[in-house]
Amino acid sequence: MKDNVNREYTIEWLQYDRPQPMYSSDINKFYDNFYQHNPVHTPDLDQQFKDTFVQWLNNHKYSTFSGLEAFTRLDIINGCTQYIDDLYQRCGTLQTFKDDYKYHWRLNNDIEYTTVDTLDPNKELLIAMPFPFYGDVHPDMTQILDRCIELNIPVHIDGAWISCIRDIEFNFDHPAIQTIGISLSKGGMGGNRIGLRFARNTPEGAVTIMNDFNMNSQATVSMGIKFMEELGPEYFWTKYEKDYAKVCTDFNLQPTKAIHLANQNGRPVGIRPLLRFLHK
Image 1 (cartoon, rainbow, N blue to C red):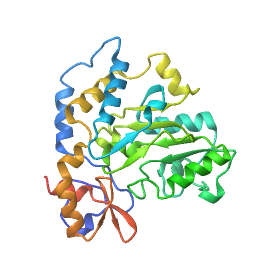
Image 2: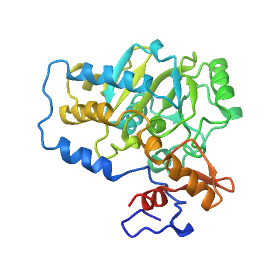
Image 3: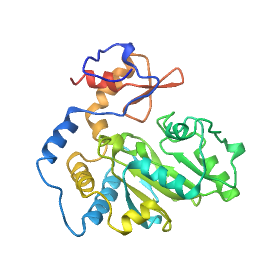
Image 4: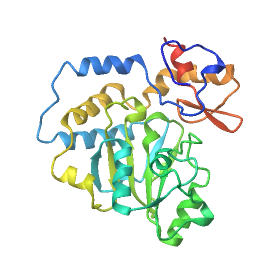
C-alpha cells in the first residue's frame, strides 16, 4: 500500500509490493529553506561535493565502510539509477541476482537471473550492497566475489541503500570490485538525486563525459552538500530508531538493517507508513 496522509497504525499499512524509502517532514523543511537561496556557484563546487561525500561516509557511526581509498576516480552521478544506466550503456548486458533492484526487471521483463553456480564469465556483474531483499549484505557476498575473481568477472556495486542502513561493515577493496555507486536518494533526496561513483580506473561512458566537461547540475550538487552538512549520516536511524523497534515488536516483524524495511516470515515488508504515523 502506498503511503499517504491517511495512514493508520495497523497491519494493513505494511508495504509488500513496493516498500517505499523513508521520508519525513524534516526533509520538506530542508527543501523549503534551501530553495530560498540560489545554488552556490564556485569553481570547485564538484570537488567540494566529492570531499563532503567521502567525509559523510567516514562519519557513519553505526556502519563502517573501508577500502574506498583504492578507488581513485570519483565522478558525480544523478543517483544510482544513472550509474546503472551508464553500466548498461557501456557493457551492453549485465548479470544480476534474483531479488536485486527491480529496475533490472523493468528494463527487461524476460531477464534471467544468475546464481553463484551459473555466473557467466562473459558478462560483468552488478549487485546491490546492501541487497534490497535482505536489507543487508547478500548472504553469499563473499562467495560471489571470490567466484568472480576465479572467472575474471568485473563486479560493480550498487550502494543506493547505504544512506538508509546501519550495523553493516563492508570492505570495498575486494579485487573483483571495479566500481561503486552510492547516492543520497534513500537518505531523503529521492526527488533530487545526487551521488558519487567510485572507480579503480577511469571508465568510458556518459558519466565520465558529464564530469570531464562540467555538465553536472549545480543545483543538486549544492543541495547534496548542504544535505550532508545539515542532516549528517544515518539521519533516519537517529530519528526513528525507537519507533523502528516499536513497529517490529507491535507487528511481530524481524528487523533488517534498512530503516524502511522489516521482515515478515522471510518476506521483506515496508514499514514507512507506520514509522511516519508515529511522528505525524
